[in-house]
Length: 164
Image (cartoon, rainbow, N blue to C red; front, side, top):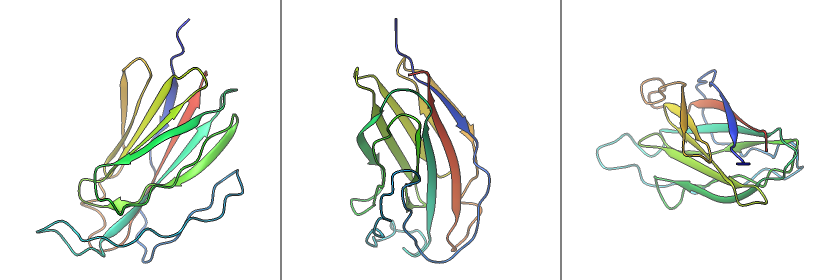
């Protein structure tokens, strides 16, 4: 019997213009708020480095199986800070996958004890999930690039891991 991850992607809701950068504490684990990532230089020809946003992804493990974080990747800069933790069964984690607003992408890869992987992708204007059988689903959220100007925006998305 194959173990295919079913991930329901609940589309994001809002973009909120705000200033400042704040750490996010783990939702259910009691983990202290992480440190703010160091500043980086904005890409050539782009807005200043201060034009950043926060991409918050809430990952729910609704299954009976513990999920271990095996990688947290991005396509932006080496100084970008990824904040995520392992997901025991029946827990959730609010993850701050902050990056610059130009070409921002965050990938979270979780594995169950049998080695089956679940990959979750969050971009600046859409979110998607890859099941272990190679299929992909996408959910349109908010195009941050066209929405926040030089402010700081917040995009929220949810991923649910079920049937593990």
